[in-house]
Image (cartoon, rainbow, N blue to C red):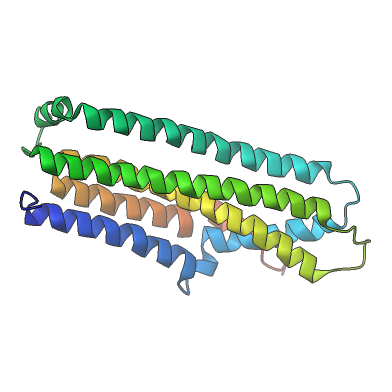
Length: 230
């Protein structure tokens, strides 16, 4: 670890702080409810209210199947990425020579390059766990849909509605965390070139995520739909 410079330590600490910090901000801060994840939960509640009043739920099953297909695609893709990174780990000398030829690239020792690659590998392993846990929760959501009784129009059962919406949101939130890991994985690639570029790209990723979660056109559209008319 003596080969890790102060700028590399700073870049790595900023990366971890940005990743963990933004995750907390977007999910647990007092502003989280106004973000895309918070507003989406309101629509999941409305979906659940409509679902329990439908005797036949083929449409709901198809929607959950579509969500599961997207998660499954990302989980499968992540496995290939992890396998590729493990292959790169075995051919690290070629990667070091390639990175050294890039503009503004800084010379890096083999030990530091291994650390960089392991950090990148860890990011995608985290993403894989998030996607597979999301997939399992969507499976459980399918079971809940099948087990939920038919509530006749005009009646309501908020306990069932909240259970369905919560399971849906938990699965969706894990999927979002996996996607977020992909964004930060892209930032981690920049570390192979320059630690200061790593810091800059990590900062850009946080800004992009914030704009999409809290200042995007789709959020404005969804937020308008949750307000009472008039």
